[in-house]
Length: 269
Ligand SMILES: Cc1cc2nc3c(=O)[nH]c(=O)nc-3n(C[C@H](O)[C@H](O)[C@H](O)COP(=O)(O)O)c2cc1C
Image (cartoon, rainbow, N blue to C red; front, side):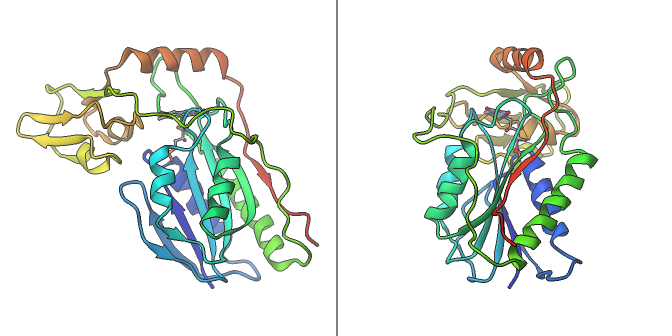
């Protein structure tokens, strides 16, 4: 009986929330030992859980849905009756149908979903002139993640049916999942690039190849996740697509109000 995390998290906001919830499940009566952190950001992981495990599953919202590649990679996992906690993390704009989709795919992979939540993470397209949920999850978010964990533990220790209330989203989902845009969002300022290779390492779709002339980006493979921009220590990776800037400006104009995490738990005694 262990508490695991499983996440697709190119810019690590989801991974941070997953860990905070996992930590929150420790050190309290009825705790279960910390298990594995299973990262499916770069590749699928074949894993079958035990029935008495709890697994915190976290994925980001891309255009109101889950990233196609995350859903694909998740199919290598067998929940085998383990308890699932579904968390969709979004950039303070709109979570769309993603949380419903996440609970759906958790069930399809054999989890009994006992809790679900939307959390907020710094938007992948945040930039100096258009900050979007910058720095989130922040201390207040992580405290909420621990509170959520406490409530999950109460559910696990309670009696009665484990019926999850309705989560946001609708069937059929209102949008198709986002396709790869077909052009790279990012490129490299070679004057600043130290050819360290970190951008190549973090890219979830292997769109970046390091050469002696710097990183080459395959526009057809780029998912616009911005992992390379955020990881680059010399700020050489930049958004090159004007569409990113346009989107950031639009989001900055329309979604300033701070959204808070929201959770959905069975009313168990
Ligand atoms: C291609 C793309 C589409 C996105 N679409 C949305 C969206 O529809 N609504 C939203 O609030 N945030 C959206 N985001 C922001 C991410 O959901 C947010 O930054 C999240 O915290 C990223 O998770 P990660 O750090 O675990 O990768 C999008 C990000 C990307 C890269």
